[in-house]
Length: 431
Ligand code: IMP
Image (tube, rainbow, N blue to C red; front, side, top):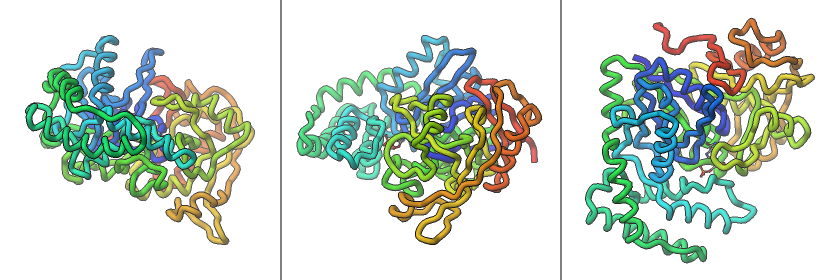
């Protein structure tokens, strides 16, 4: 049995969807363990693009069981829309193949309303959230006023829970000058949600533990990225959940010994959406070029992503936090055609050198990256299916990253299509 965690090693959008889809054919189950519909995982299969926000990226493999774990926050309207879109594309979702945790919390319209009203009120200090209500929904989890799928079956109980939640949330919305919410409309909408989703609702942790006990391979699918982790990321410009690999155990409801391997996904460069520090950001023609060549626009919000050079101090930090056993290097093809490729190998700030991302808000904002310049390469890498098929400078780049981070590269992705990648090591191979 292997429990393989797939985690974003940067600020999200590293290409986790494609990597999970790739490994999913060797796993019996894929479980999402945190986040909600703020994530956007784009899969390109036979030229057809599917964007998933909540359903795990293993769903396109007919035999893989996909689960949304108790660590996630689920907007039921977004989930139903996704299930409908998948059904329209011929992907039939039976309850044997899609599991929804009874302990997962719901993201309600009131959460999105609070998220947006707050961002507007924050003005220039806004976080640049996705506006999907993720932060307010997680606040309600720890404030003990959240609504879980387990709460939907008993209307009288649900009414009491909703009244308590709306009492607090409406006070805030009124204070922000935004429209408030009524219990009645929500109760009705949630009855319809219950009618459709109840067949999928179950104890996900138990299902995963049972599969593992039979010797099945499990994939744990992370969302966002390490540097957006609520504790370890570039706080306060972070998401509201624990994105790091250890969160896979809590967010699924299994013990940490089931997490046997951790693959960190990193682009061959860096991107970030929303506000917050980004030491290697490029505000020039090269940044523009990366954005255009890499189609760097948010899968959830369509916002242009900020682009920059690969940041090794940040990646080293991610390797340590996640206990990475392998790296998946994506979008290597996007760097093709550059005369030289730069990589930040350390930071400097006030006479001090840093080899990992600092926590001090002034330091992280003001550090100067120290770059190493590597030779560039030309040509379309999209057809490469082996390391030897890459130009020598691209091979050197892969080796440089591996050496500098101290983690072996297990997979290289060279284009958006499902087949445009190759493996250097099989994480499921017997050891
Ligand atoms: P929230 O998760 O919507 O609260 O947004 C908080 C921060 O996380 C913002 O900077 C978002 O742009 C960022 N973020 C949230 N989800 C993703 C994602 O899936 N990819 C990249 N950035 C994300």
